[in-house]
Length: 59
Picture 1 (cartoon, rainbow, N blue to C red):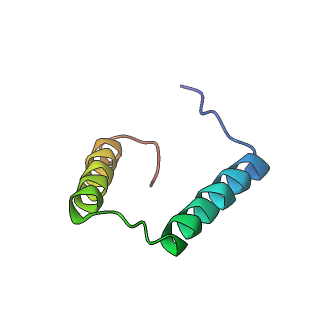
Picture 2 (picture 1 turned 60 degrees about the vertical axis):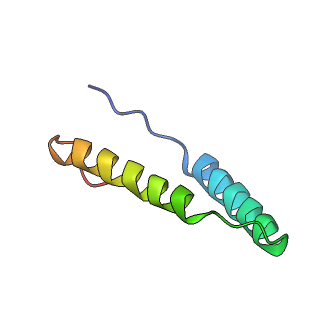
């Protein structure tokens, strides 16, 4: 299966946009609730366990 690569400029722009949005939210006092953080980590663990059994490399 061919792996699609995203140009690094596109990745950097996406990362910067999300970091800036996070900073805006923090400055406004908007933070994730504990249940939202737990759910995000659970999704990450589920995705990692899916990829651990395959030869796609580390996440």
